[in-house]
Amino acid sequence: NAGVTQTPKFQVLKTGQSMTLQCAQDMNHNSMYWYRQDPGMGLRLIYYSASEGTTDKGEVPNGYNVSRLNKREFSLRLESAAPSQTSVYFCASIRAFFFSGANVLTFGAGSRLTVL
Amino acid sequence: GIQVEQSPPDLILQEGANSTLRCNFSDSVNNLQWFHQNPWGQLINLFYIPSGTKQNGRLSATTVATERYSLLYISSSQTTDSGVYFCAVLPLYNQGGKLIFGQGTELSVKP
Image (cartoon, rainbow over all chains, first blue to last red; front, side):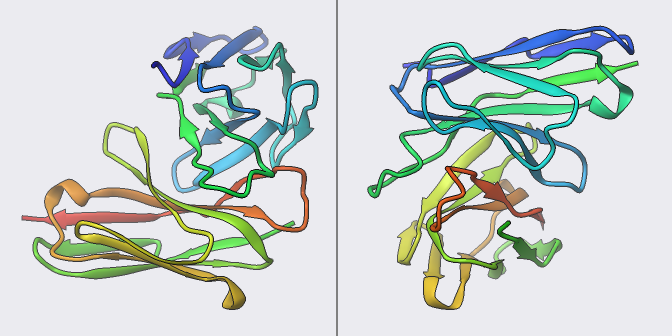
């Protein structure tokens, strides 16, 4: 059982290049999230998908787009990368945001992105 | 939107000491979790605790939902407890599943 898998683990981009971070979960979770982590800033929510077919902006959505491809997969796209997007990106999933039982967020290992 | 504040931002302990980390939130929640991020960046769930008290070995957590705070207790700290501790909350009154983190408490346990 792999849990949440993110690819790539590391990526270096030049300003203006585009790329997509891939995320897949095998736990049959409904809700999926993308966070970025910068030193001293904690984890900030970029976009989330409460259920298949829906996506919503989080705290810091500018410069990003997302696609909930199916129940398993949630990708994050940088259309024109900027140095300010240098960060560690985490994908996470949860059974369902409305689930009233034990509802634990599971993280991927993270993707370290550097934009030059 | 909901605000999540953690204190203290940094904490240095000698091995064997006890500590209390706090998480305050500005609105009602139906999901609260504590995480530990180890020095390698891995995020591990410690507790799912929207209310009440739970214990797991040297760690315990208490959430007082009516007063909008949660506490994480670490007893007899060990160097392996070092890292950053985060709380995360899901607002009760439907922000559609937006799960928000506090800024974390960075703990360093010295031998």
